[in-house]
Length: 306
Image (cartoon, rainbow, N blue to C red; front, side, top):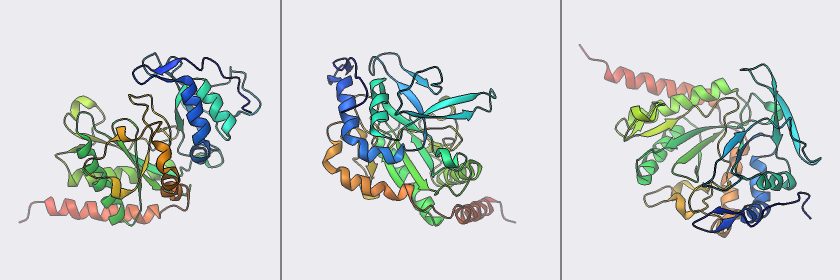
């Protein structure tokens, strides 16, 4: 029996589809064994939608003024901006997961690192933000990211964001700090931009990248989060952030294929696809050297001769 006294189970969270808060809780109860490995021991940023996807939402980091149930763990982390401790929930068990769902957390947003290795992420990620570009174009860019990683001696894993983009992960095994991880992510993004300058952008401001897909490498900093694999998204259709095989990342793929109802059809297969993300990481320093050599070669080729 769940330890959380659930409330307002009939409240409609997706007006068009009719899914309720109770459906969110039931989903996380069923998916718990598959999502918890990507949440365990990680500080969580709570993305709360108390009135569903059409109502106001907010992010909550600090829970120090909340009376947490005994089964919910938290960790205090000093915020560099204020010098004060921020108390984050750590989702280590199904009861905590359901407690968060009962708070209106449709989405689960863990840190890239765990509490025992706070400054060493388990992976780096390139977040492909399409803006107004088509998803088929996102697929083209995602495959370019994969090629750049493989040419540098690494390996990568893809998932839908659950909304309009794709996330590409590289396992690091908590062997490198965030500075190294972010630097490598930037080198990767620059390599893809050199290949696809007509289709991609490194500009942070949307107005400066109209018609181009943003290669967001800045997600690789302390405290940054992305929706976890198998997380629901507060988006039309009750979509899920779905792990993919690279053979699936092709023309015709659509994030809307993967929803609160369809996810369970191939769950074991998709879980196995992503197990290496939390296993032994790549040799990031070797990857960096290869990426930098490639960048130098590209720069030399562009210099005028004579």
